[in-house]
Length: 350
Image (cartoon, rainbow, N blue to C red):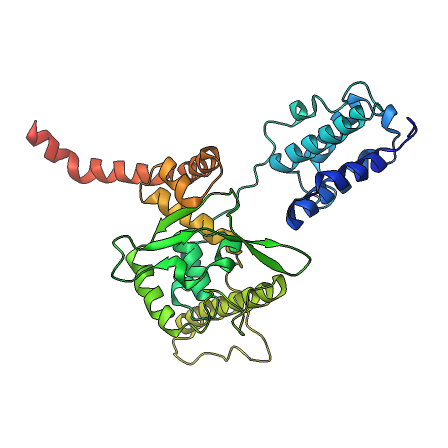
């Protein structure tokens, strides 16, 4: 090698080594990150890249991500800075550089860069999940009331769910997950995302629901394909899209009945199509709704972190902090109610 080597060549060499033994999803994430960096410095000779060029890249991404045309999230900026730093360290090890030009890249990330927080579903969507029958309803209910990740749900089997009367603690043992192995297939691995197992107690509404569903189950998997097999990316996408359509149709029917004062509603297969009356949501938003329910129930952040299976309490704390800001008005409403109805009682007690 000579010092005339381009950054994208070194980046590709680093990627080949960095992805040895890693999962498909992580490998693709690193690949996307390198593509992002290559937009700015890919064709520069490695020896000509100086700190100002890296700083400009971080600042440009902070203003506008070329892929989304929106400000880049703080998490993505941090990943970009880390990957760039590691690639330059790789170059230093091969004596192509003396000093890492990305050594201060993280300091250039704006403090006000947006945080990528997934919002929970609305209460209207919550009611629809409980009411809408669909082959994906069981999976949606489990994510909503137990906070499983999609990979954990796909790998879940009925032996993991302890709902029989012999169990003093009724809940779900989460001991495994699905790992993406190519563009369409999953493989069950004996570990969760953070390599830990956890037990999530179930509320009575879920115990009663799952008892009925278990009696009807035709597969050992809780959320299988129609043929009882492990889900793939394409089957999940297909089933989830169908589920969202059913949720929207039920919402439309309720609004149609209220507007037209009739119990007769259009068929879901009408040629005109059903208007979109509720916002579509992802499976991950159900997991965040579970976290929101824990927060509103008064569950402390440490317990919530264990139930969610977060790798760090800080992750849960960030979500709780956001929820506290969102629901701060509830405390004010409690104060208003107290001042209006209950303060006189204290006066008499004093």
